Length: 307
Image (cartoon, rainbow, N blue to C red; front, side, top):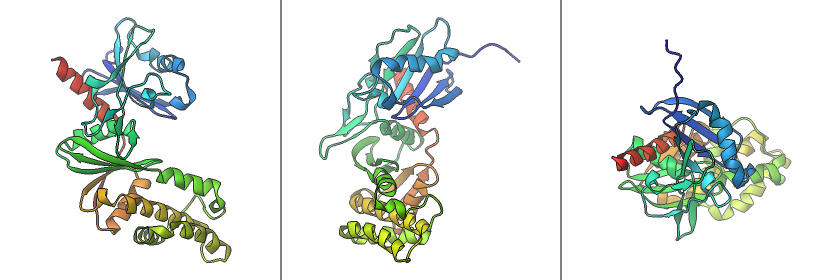
């Protein structure tokens, strides 16, 4: 057994608002080491990004040979490490050829940040999700249809011929958090249990009659006060109303389309249940390491361009 230390050929970085995730990669494309630290963009000044990265990578860097670092996510935002301007749709997912070089003080770091994507009409932006899309297309190179990425700000993305044609963002996850924690509904919503029947009913109510959502939301509180509904059911119904409202607005994206949901159990399953009940054709592609797949895709494009 060899004790020779294996140094990375390059490092993949997903630098989000709350966390920094990294994968140290071999020349063969294998993960040598990976990790995550709670050092996201929101808590760092621009001059703190390189020291933060070095605190993570120092133990695995070669003492003299430089390493390529490829970043996606909020490190490239205007408030991040170094701005990587948006690419405009329609476009393929950005690869390293249009990444932005970042000046560094340590000569062992060659850092490049991938840009996000912007849409002019209607105005919309994404930063980080474009790399997940690249990961999906790496696994499904012939996919034509819609990719949905549920989360705090859910993205619906129309894909055709390997390009991002258009997309739309819904703040459904953030609205759920605000209503369940900071409105009168906090007294009616629990953090446990799930009622599939109530969720489905609420989705259908919202899709068929979205103009009554404001009234239906207050009804969740009223039903609890008059003893008609318990807290777990109210949570399921709140989720159903908000996801249903989103699906009503996103109908052009999922109606008659092949839909890939990028996510894990929980929220992705809720979207799958809702779409299936509405007659849509949807499947889940687990999001585990899908960002890494997208970063691999971008790095491979750079290697191909250099040959």
